[in-house]
Length: 363
Image 1 (cartoon, rainbow, N blue to C red):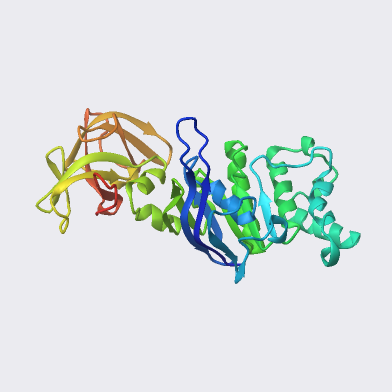
Image 2: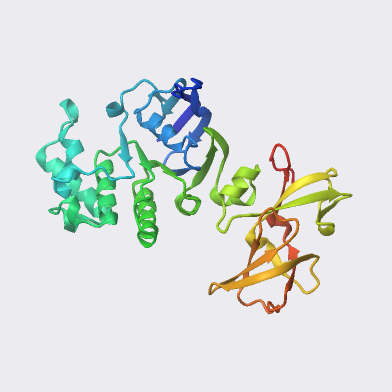
């Protein structure tokens, strides 16, 4: 099911004592979600991603704009009539009911022509339980399950209605690191098997990039950039996107473009032909450094962290916006890292230039 959001806006009334100004949680949101794809809504707390999800499922009504499921305008449709499945951060399971009863609950509330027989309901419940691999836990109650198992029950309960759209609001944030990894892989597997159009809300960029067909990066209710995860990472439109995506985060420097060259602290480090002379903010991905005995980018070496496959080089530079910057290099690199100085060449595809005032990408 294709989902289309047109000029979607949600405003909340101001509640401050000194200011009654409206809060715009989602601002002129335009997005088309292709049929059968998993889309990650990504951004920091307060960026409007959960509000957008609640508008999709009907828990909130938009101030302006329209929502379409396929060709159907569902903007004014009640939540129970939208045929969406919702998975919450806190699982929202009924503690006194068994896994089977939790999964069956949405089907038992169907009325009229949608009502299923007891046999049909049980078959559907076991089908989705097998899909999420909890069919051996049907007689247990939520308190007898691990966090990951509870989240699978919540997913099964959302899927049992055979929804047109599946919505997930930070479904992994209550799990420990290893369980988060396992569960996000399961979510991706389930989505690929069911081919249900899915919207996945998270503030974890690694989580979103690893399982999404496309990501939508948000800030202050506005879409900053949308596209395939790797493309957005490799080609950020502005400084916010560049900083938000990446772990370790991007390194920032104050630089100068002069006569077709980029200078960091008076040292020419990169060709920048075609970019007018100006002061710029320079972003360099940690993997954008190559150790070189004759490198033009000369830095003070702080320390080296060996991480198995990779080596993390922590260094200082007078143009850096932070006390220390980080380069990720291969553990097979042969350059001496015991001196007080380290030299790099820069990989052009990993260096981004941003306007100092607008923070928009210029190179």
